[in-house]
Length: 133
Image 1 (cartoon, rainbow, N blue to C red):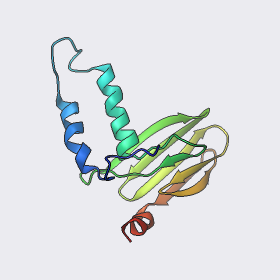
Image 2 (cartoon, helix red, strand yellow):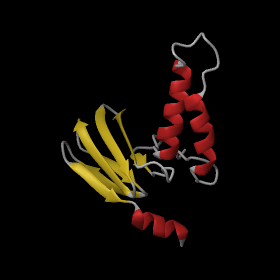
Image 3 (cartoon, rainbow, N blue to C red):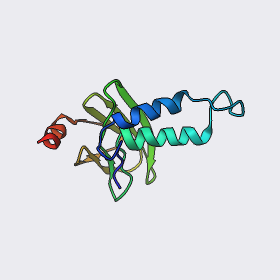
Image 4 (cartoon, rainbow, N blue to C red):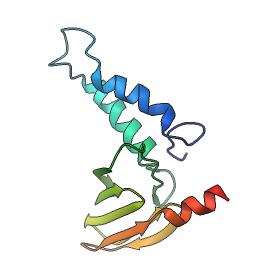
């Protein structure tokens, strides 16, 4: 299953609900408005949706769809015993294998090799052109 922001693939449909979730403090039982379950849901909405993280299959996938008002998104994750750092900024994705054996990573539909300590930088501009054709 591919992570997506909405059935239409547009981040606009989740931006409002995600912003509301970030600002909501429903009662005094939460620690300063922080709810662990809500934080998990928010992380999943952002990373699976806006970053387009795809954990299914044998290859880690990233297919970003950041809201236009976001400048960047950075996060780390563990994938099959490896530590991977991801940074999405505009139409560029950077992936760094922080720890672990070389691996394949799919960015905007194209699979590439990720090697230790080397930062892979990919422009997603070309994939946007193919999607709109």
